[in-house]
Amino acid sequence: MLPADLREIEILIIDTLQALDNFIIEKEFIHDTFGIKSPESLSDFSKTLNAFKIIESKNSSLIDSSIITSQIWKVNNDDPYRLINDLELYQNQSRILSKFNDNILQTDIDDLIRQIREVDGKKFRLFKNNKKKIENIVGRYYQRFIPDSDQIIRDLSTLKVAIDLKKKVEANSDLARQYFGQYWYLGANVNDLKSITKWMKEFWMLVEEGVFSTKTIELLSKDLFNIDAKDNLSNYIALGEDFRDKLSKLDKKLNPRSKLIFKRDTEDVTFDQWKEQLNNWRGQLSSLHLWSQYLTTKNSLKGTYSELFIDVIEKRNVLKEDVKSLVYGNFADALLNVMFLENQQLATFIGELYENKINEFKNLDKSILKINRKRIFHKINSNIPNIFGGAQGSQAQILAGEFTRKSGHLPVRKLLQKAGGLIKKIKPVFMMSPLSIAQYLDPTNDELQFDVVIFDEASQVKPQDALGAFMRAKTAVVMGDTQQLPPTSFFEQMADGDSYEE
Image 1: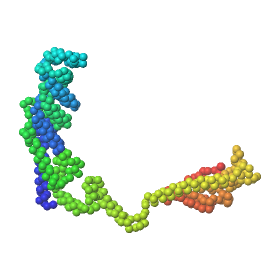
Image 2: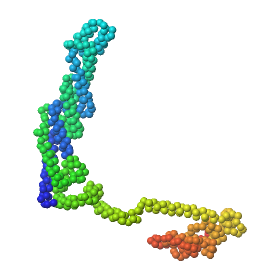
Image 3: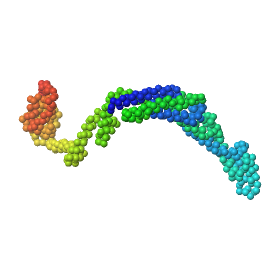
Image 4: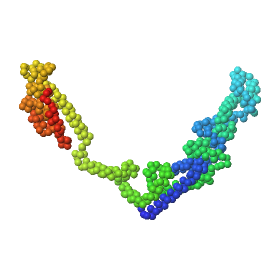
């Protein structure tokens, strides 16, 4: 981008800002003067132009103060159309009145029809004076020619419908005059009433949308006041279109992608947002060459795989700080695809099947642990000897005697010396402290030798205290943490304070 281009863009931005400022001043003037809604965007501006067309339309000349100020138009219903339809039906049917004198309106139409049908009945068809009798019945009602009996019945039936419609129209006259004022009467121009209804419906819709206000209604209700769009609003329209034109030129030159910036179409961006953004662009002109470089790079990537990636970035579907990681990730993924294609073992590798096998192995391993617990429990349980009924002097007899004795039990050390082997078969696992091992387990007794000794929290036991436990087992398992605190004097205090009593 050359310096001349930057200068042209700067001039366009300044001109657009000036056009916007001029339009903002004018739209506020129009709002204050005519009560017309001050547009917030170009879309609102277009709505006001359509509203002006309604005011300028030929139908607006039919609207007088009584109609435009009538609050009944606020109610959004079909009453005006129903009233007009009834009036139109009446006017179509009322043409029959031209055949009759006015006195027909005071006559019972149903009785006349009955009399005609009686005279025209089968029992009278042989008499020549039937026609005379019918003329005597209806002659005073018809203005000119009296038709045959069938036509008379049709005329009277149509007349009855017209009279009923007239009564219905007259019954709704008060409501109709609230809508149409002096335009409403039996001979009213139906097309004018329809035009008034269409105009008022459109007008009040704009009032509800806020385009027109009560001030607009007040001005339009004045007989000597007229809003002429070509005269009163020409400057407003011209300035609004000028801003739209300047913005369009800037858009073609700068291609700012308003929807990406504002998350809405250009026409829906508010004027305040445009003013802020235009000022931002004006302050960032010095970095515009970077944008030019970006566009050049973007164009060079068209037709490549990167084009789709650029589209994702511009739509802001990814954060800018994640772009670099995504590029590396895609590159690594592409390399993996190449490796899978070149290596047959990787190509046929199905990760899901592999994971299923791992999970199956884990489940089987857990099942084996559970089964082993049950197997060990069963083995130990089956080895428990029968205590009662043992031989004289046997370990079973000694232990049975201790179970039945209420007092005078053997000390634990002595009991373990005499029946330790049997006790170990019943409870093969002893949980003891090093001091308890020294007190109760004779190291010279082969029956009190264990397969394994397990030290937990070994860092809390001094080596000399642990030596006795090692002497009583074939194997040792030591567990501890070198980062824990050193051994305490807990066991020494116990040794000093405890007696030999069981």
